[in-house]
Length: 446
Image 1: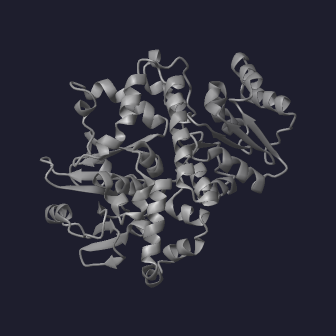
Image 2 (image 1 turned 60 degrees about the vertical axis):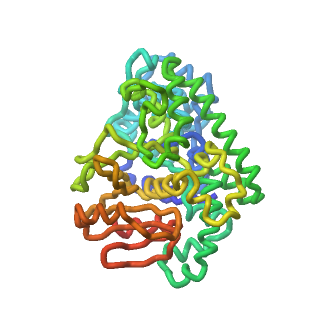
Image 3 (image 1 turned 90 degrees about the vertical axis):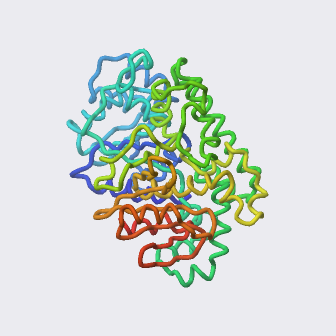
């Protein structure tokens, strides 16, 4: 596998004077452990100390039960692994660090007392540990003193469409997108669109991509996805407070049906008659902390900065991976040969999920805009350095845009963006971006 985020880890490692312990965030099975090992093998092949705090129970217990400081924790790790930890030469990898709250807390002391030591921490449910202090004490038995200001963060998303192209042997097509070689891209527009359909079924979970790359077997891919979904459900049962478990499962399983509605805004009464937002806030936060869902909030108007116009009471709820959404929705593989039906299926939800994933992987925090009456809606609104851009998502080549026109008439943006199965075009008021290029081209506007 080739992951673009690996370059971000290398950049972190190279900035030694400003470097702090790195915390890698992301949902289970997005490839964090693989990235750690790949980076270690390339940059520290002879001097990596790798600790799995889930599997190494004796070490974890020694740390948690002891009364030692951060330097003492380093000594315990060195003794357990039989390897000397030399600041300035050794890479210390702490996988599944959420299993050891004392080790997580000690990261700030590593920075203060051993700043030359390269430390990377990761964990499948690390977000839950980092946000424990934000929830009620009765919901979480252990508290963590979070190392505020003493760590660097890196979010690991699922594989993007261009990474998928690399994985399936289509690196030249990726290169054409990155070069903005639109004439060449147009000549292979049908091929790009077909690859995008396949990506919407496979998604960006590395094991699913690897399975497809090796066998081109969608049934095998779906089996992998179902195993991932089953593992998520086991995480619910194992890690979530029992009082939250039914609500977490209800929210998670409702994502496909909620996105299938014309108005994709999450409505709690659709989950259960009489349900109120406050009843589900903690469950929703649990899913978000676990990296499994993304909320896209409405903005009342496109002002700068967008966050100041955020409406916390109105949001759409998405999964974190388009392939898992396809599996949750039980979308049959035959849709791949039924024209563009896969993009239009259940109100274009897969298309929106795909675009959201590409935006997030590009470092964008997207919002959406809708009128108070719900008569017009633009799927995403993104903030650039100097401007706000509405981004309408179309599931086909049909470029009629009543909602985008309504937005333009109200707010007179300098430029509107539209992503669809149409080819690239730059207009006076609206620029068209092919869906398969949105992840790369959106950066041109930021």
